[in-house]
Image (tube, rainbow, N blue to C red):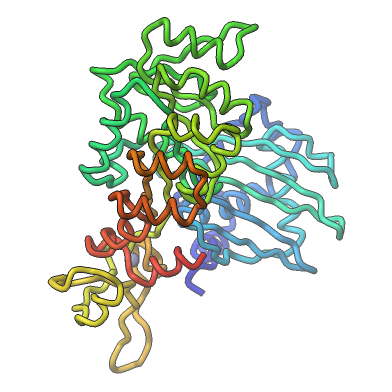
Length: 439
Ligand SMILES: [Zn+2]
């Protein structure tokens, strides 16, 4: 099993049963997020038994770039599952007592109450691995069989806020962002489903604004550092509308607000959006569905049609591992079927490990991706940038399908078109595109 966690490390451990110099790089824990000191001395026996397996578990997850690490106890065994680039993968197994000890160890490391069992607890711990800093959010949930389920969410702190070009936005799309925000008017919304990277797109849109020409104010509660954006201080008794009025008086050009989740917030935004450009995010499957929801919240189709200026949505697609992707010459029929230009000379697909001709055995999996074939993800972007015909259709209360169809003829970017661009550029495969569209 290529992905058994800690196999290599266990061997090392078994061979030198003492505390000899470690040959492998393991995660370092650097303090609980709640600021409490982990009392290692009072838990010496637990530390002795469980610190190393805990480090092995986390190290394997970080090495494989997992977003989540989950440990489920079934009978006398525990199974680890990882989510990597949004896909589930099996991690290692361990005996039930070890899984219980690891859970206890993480409670101590997170400054939680280790004596408390059978109750929901959550916390976090800072970690460092191979020069990169992480925050691990730990959630412990009681299970019906009196065990506890361990869920660890990984946040890589080195992931900086990305610009539109970091995210691979086309020059046309970057120009669209600059145009939209220059109007001192209207709502720009980024939408997506949870976990689809919508916040990343929102920040990219914000970073696509020319900060030398326009002053951007943020009223959003965010822990991320926003470059060149002025964090606005909300007065104790001010609601959103009042605060936005104050920002307009301070000559803001663009205001960044927290995600829109209800009619009340939207109506407050709409009450000022004829004088200022507002950027926000919301949950929706795609751009036309977001518009439908905004119209409903607004309660005034005409107003919504005038004040929504642009909607962006994204779906994440996995990127082919550039170490092991395989080039192939696509036949003309395939190109026609999927809608790629007939002159396309080369496309790429997921690499398969080479098979030794003599022995018939597979070669070792790719070192970079571990044989998964993919490494990292990228957003496919869909847009609806308002034009007069689109505004008219919204004001008339046309159904989502009609809006979608018109957006296409009005030259808006579709997931399909942007996805094919990534295929043509060799960044992803047709199979991966199909998987995302099916999901
Ligand atoms: Zn690879």
